Image: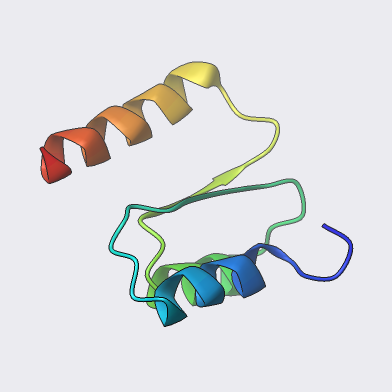
Length: 67
């Protein structure tokens, strides 16, 4: 994203008090950024390239928790 990164977007979502599950998907991740994302309210942090089944499992897990 040109002017912001995923953590900036996550912060804006949380600032608007939107209670939706957020799964961060990134190509440039680090353990520190994953911890930061989760501490900011992300439910999961998935690194690219990822196994589609892994992402499916994460999504299904959170759909089940919010249903």
